[in-house]
Length: 217
Image 1 (spheres, one colour):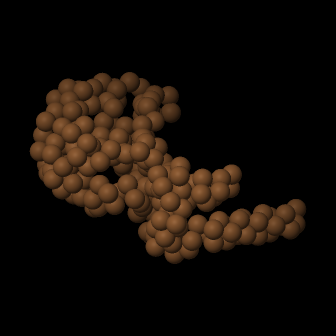
Image 2 (cartoon, rainbow, N blue to C red):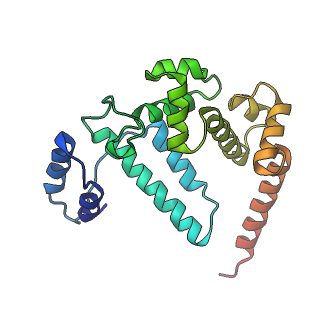
Image 3 (tube, rainbow, N blue to C red):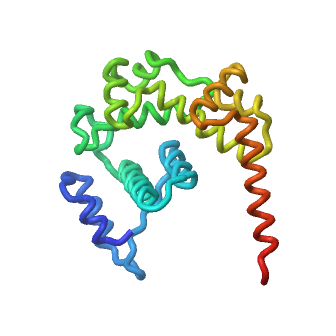
């Protein structure tokens, strides 16, 4: 990232975090680009997965990818922020107060086969379940349950596209006890049953490969 962008993005940040950013920006880079190593957390992994799986086109694609790029920057800054984890109101979204919401998401997606209940999850992040659900909806636009459901279905789509698992295996891997329930939820979300989706995906992939092979050199 260019230093001018980081300076603009970090406007309004105060305290030790701001001083840390200024110190890093003061280090001259040969190519003039700011770099900072970060750990690939579950949140970052999901964001990258959403970028790679983007199906939008035209202006919507540009907006979607731009928003995800900013989300990656936010997750990266979280790892650099020494003040992260302070007890701040979850509705003051400009002060980095979404920490326990992101923590709840990370806990859920780290084990989608056996996620904790809402009561257990709220206890793990230190708030009551009503507060967790309200703040989760404010940050992500959906309830905790609907977020988990969507994540499971998106992950099942990726596994089916990989082509090395049966529908039943995928259903169990993403946390569905019964294949029938999984197929019903998958069709409701994607418009096709898992079997139809897999068949169409393989056929479409095969057609694209054949077209590439027929291209003249």
